[in-house]
Length: 66
Length: 265
Image 1 (cartoon, each protein chain N blue to C red):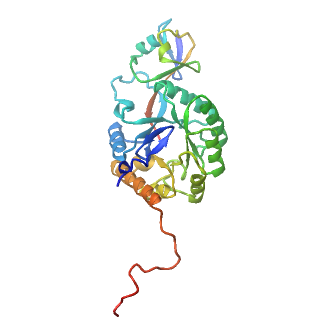
Image 2: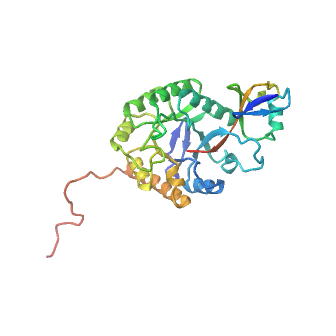
Image 3: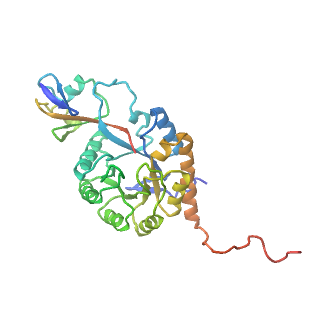
């Protein structure tokens, strides 16, 4: 299925949970936050939340800034 | 005498006491090693971080800012830099809270213009009200307008942070009477945020009675950032002590330092 990941279209396996998507992206265990269609998906929900085709997924982290 | 020698002179923000009155940003450094070295030399306990998209596909073993500057040593202050409306700023703060496990302390800045990076105070007020209601401890970046600073305090912001000059300009405090007016009227900490260029600018802010100074570029863009970080630490402490000591009154004419009586010539 195709989702929009951090602003870019991307093909990912169908029916992934948020946790499985992070695993697929080799990002499990990193300090990050996820938003799907403008709503935050809390870490406690990652294993339950299913990502759907066309979803807009944002994955953010903390970087240097003033 | 340093701040740590005066246990009663801590900076209290949202019920938390800090010994350092210098807050630093973590942007614009050459690499994470330089960031860490400069932050350590500054003695800062509160450090700002930005929230940005993850680089998908980057090496997962690449060092992370939060590992280099760990949470057990520093209080993170996620900022809303780059936001030009209240909605984006609120969204950024909520993502930061999720990212940092329920962390409540945020730096709110809503910009109005790319050339000056001046705050959009209307959007800032709107965002501040919503964030405070949502349980955030808001340290707010604003212009040096005394009325607006008071309004932000009344909205429930835990600290108000007027600019000295435009972000990254290094021009120093442009309107010290406004800063003084804000400080004298405040019942929350007032920190100068943005526009400091060198150590004397930081000392002036503290001599005016500011509770602290937040800076990034003045350290990161120095030729030797680590040396400048140490200079800023001393300037903040010197300025604070001068403020507490109370400066002598200004006089128009001279006043001899040696006794005028007892001269033998």
